[in-house]
Length: 195
Image 1 (cartoon, rainbow, N blue to C red):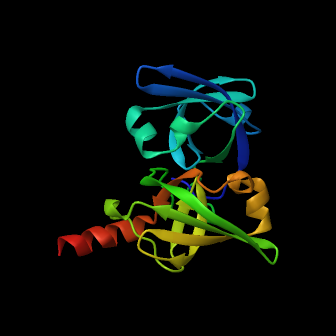
Image 2 (cartoon, rainbow, N blue to C red):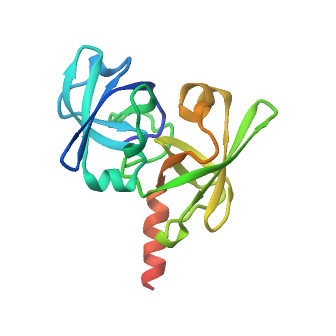
């Protein structure tokens, strides 16, 4: 379980394919503090640490994870958002994030607006995921509030702190991002669909 508050950016150091799996080696400020079997969010995807080496750690993404996320598009040298699992009993500064990506979306627009940024994203609405105005959304592991919602697209406002300390400063129009929709909203949508 995560909060969607990114701790640090990591850098992809190595990518190894083994069958349908992808082993991802990441260098970061927190890698030396991790432990084998620990869950860490990588661009919003909960992955288990399988090995450690100094300031790097390695995780494995299986085929299903690669199909539902943007991890297959990673390249050596690219930055990645990292967050360790939350500690029970501490503040929940973002929202409840499971680290289970629902689908990917595409960045369709970005606009600087009086010291902050408005980003627009589009997603495949046929998968029955929904956003609502002022609801929560997780983009590449970042907990955000939806400021404009439509059937297959939404916007979020990004403050300078988030822009500078996450992958948002490197997004371009057409980039694929991982989306995790609000867990409560998913249950409500499923209940409504079965009524």
